[in-house]
Image 1: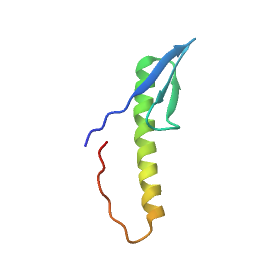
Image 2 (image 1 turned 90 degrees about the horizontal axis):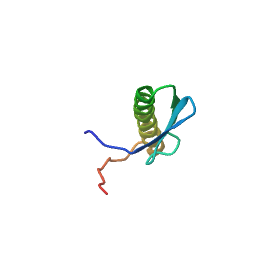
Image 3 (image 1 turned 180 degrees about the vertical axis):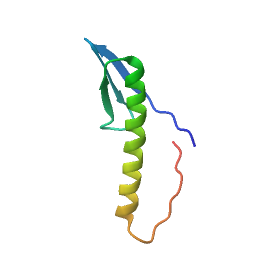
Image 4 (image 1 turned 120 degrees about the vertical axis):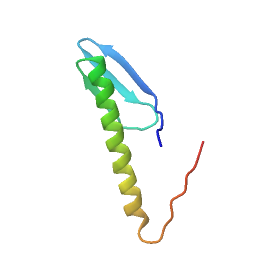
Length: 70
């Protein structure tokens, strides 16, 4: 399932910097706009996967997963 997130980006001197609004801690800095977008995409995927594994480990043995829409 493809989900969309919002990146806030700007050029600061020679660097492009950006953050993902919905996921704290996902931020990157790159030399070009395109490199920044790709770096944000990879970092976001890694953060989501890490959070998923962390949540499942914290749940222990007997749990179920459900989808919640907002």
